[in-house]
Structures are given as C-alpha cells and as structure tokens.
Length: 245
Image (cartoon, rainbow, N blue to C red; front, side, top):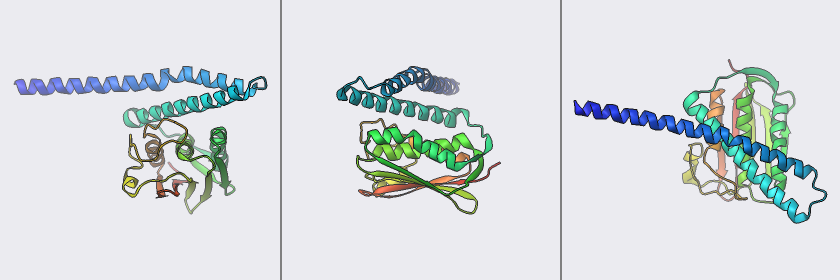
C-alpha cells in the first residue's frame, strides 16, 4: 500500500513541477517581453534622432540595439517552444504572396546584419502564391535568418533564395559561418543543443532557434535540411507545401 502511495505522491510532485515550469516560461516569455519592447522602441527613436550624438554614443546605441533585439528573439523562441510543447498551435491557412513575406523577413534583419557588417541578399522567383499558415512560415524564415546572421563573421554574406518546385516552395539560406562538425549534424535541429559554433557578436544561444524552425516547418507539412562544411558555411533549405488543409 505504501508503494502505491509513494508513486501517487511522486506523480503529484512531477505534475506540480511541470506546472511551475510552464508558469516560469510564461513569466519569462511574456512579462519580461513588455519592458524590453519599450526599451527597444526608445532605442529606435534615439537612433532616428541621433544627429547630436557623438560617434561613441552612436556605437553604444548600436550595441544596445543588438542586445535588446537578441533578447526579444530569445523570448519569442521560448513562447514558440512553450506553445509547441505544452499548448499546441492552431493553423490558420490563408492565401498570400510568399515573395512579399520573404522580402519582409529579410528586411527585418537588414539593420542587425548591417551593424555586424554582414551583407544580406535576397532573390525570389516571381508569383510565389501560397495557401498555408503565414505566421508559421514567417517563424521558419525568421529563425533560419537569425541563425545565419548570429553565427556569421563580419565581412561575409548571407544569401536568401526562394523558388518553386512542383508543389513546394523552397527557401535556401546560405551563410559563410564556421559550419558544423560532422558529429554535430544529427543534433542540429534538436532542442537545447550547444554546438561548436559561437555567436560572433556575443549574442545569446539557447539552442531553440533551429528546433523551433524545424517544428514550425513540420506543422505546415514541410521540412528543413542542412548542407554544411566545417570552416566553409552552411545552406539551410526549407521545403514547404504551397497548399495545406
């Protein structure tokens, strides 16, 4: 009888720990995001009106901009992780032009890439019409771009190319980062992985970005593959169905 009682107590403790973990993730991912968003907005305003600032002050603003943007991206991944692992994600397919979405995602990273002296290019075939969940697709592109820019050294290029196969949209994101070792390739898309490559401007690395990208791609019936060579760079290729549901 005591054995069953002990098992029941352990089960309740595990449930309580899981609940506390979810609550902690909620606090970190939501409650802390609000003040960071306000700081981020203030930094952008200061950069728009920076004519009276010294070069040193402008450099500090740029560094703060990178730190805040990095923190917000980390929290967004934590929100996605919580939803994927605990709450689930409802899909809302809609018709849209993938060219506009891809170019918008690239534009969102242009300021960070410029601050890191990384050249960011994009090339899309015309008329890439999709009927899928736009937000999931955007999260796939955002996380692949974030990964490429985060690990690329100054003076390199990150290129984005989008085109269609028979029934899929294919997006290739090529970087000139250090790449991955052969023994690391099988773990690239696993959560909380710490691999040999290190961010090039002191950014955080939770090991969630590529996990979230792959999980979001799979949610809409696609997948991401990686071709990499240590010391040369990587190409992440996302193949996403043009139509779902």
